[in-house]
Image (tube, rainbow, N blue to C red; front, top):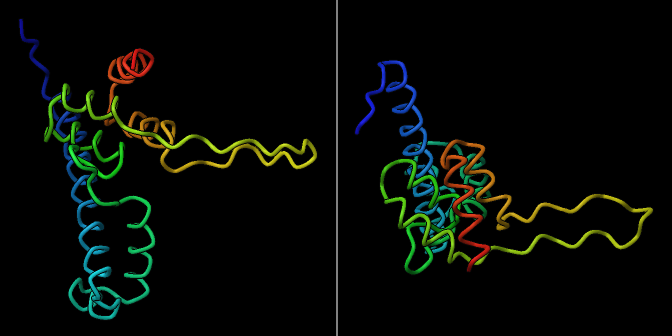
Length: 157
């Protein structure tokens, strides 16, 4: 039995899907910008192509090194976050998302400082489960049910 959404619920669902599409497209945009720079395009040349200033390109490239790595072989993203965004955008199925995020090799969180007097907390590890999948949950790209199913799958993995 299919449940019909009222018009407000439909707009909210559409808004979430468009946010995910925009995020996935922006990651791909940054990836292509970074790849052109790695192939020898100068920041000035990229600024002319894109229509922004060179300092803006510099900022975009700095962000691209973190958020837009090359796609991992056999996946739909360069980060776990990107895979979740593509799932929320409707570009990949739930089964593909679950398989890719379960098989993903997450970075281990950094060790806490061993000196009690220097308690600076654990530094964030960009590729950790919490930073990638937790962020996707927080941004609405995964539901609580998706997140719980992923935790269960990882525990069995």
